[in-house]
Length: 236
Image (cartoon, rainbow, N blue to C red; front, side, top):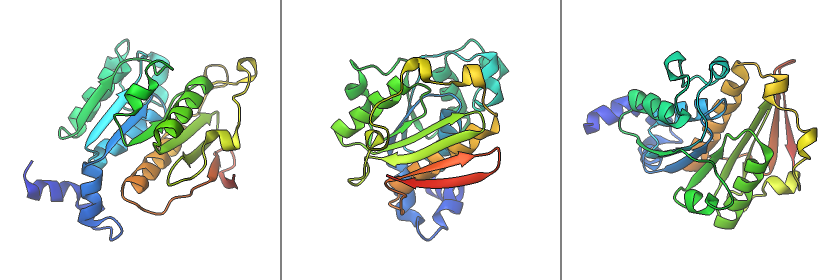
């Protein structure tokens, strides 16, 4: 892509004085891993690719199912039955062919977490279970990687930045994961399709703020409730 085309593509970001050309260069030089290509991962992947993230890794071991399509907007009917990572890669390449997409079609486990996460500068957790969330958090703490965290259920969501510039992490607010039998999930309680779009977009915004050195809401957990449209921030 020619230099003038790069500027034209990202000009609306460059025109923001807090970002400018230097900030855009940081975005284009960034290495970001998104864990999960589902409800939260979809808007994160979409907006990071649109913003020009240099290297975008996506880790997911699942396949696209029909019930995913109410919220996982980077996939479509033709993706059903196919790998979510491969579907995400096709979406990204169609949106922005300059992105260096790294497909990681495997589950993040205790055996591979350090090796996978160490390759990236910033980790975004769009996983859907507590064991993976805590594994990602603990690995980021060990490796000194900033982490953008989000979760959703029904009408409600949470978002936070962990382990960034000396800030606290997931275990500082929730020391231990809940027992599996006490955990509600989207399979049983559902999720409104637009909710992960809201929370995921906030996660993408936080990621871009980290990359471009914009102010961050550190040591704060934002609670979103779209049943009555309230947003609360809890310090920890």
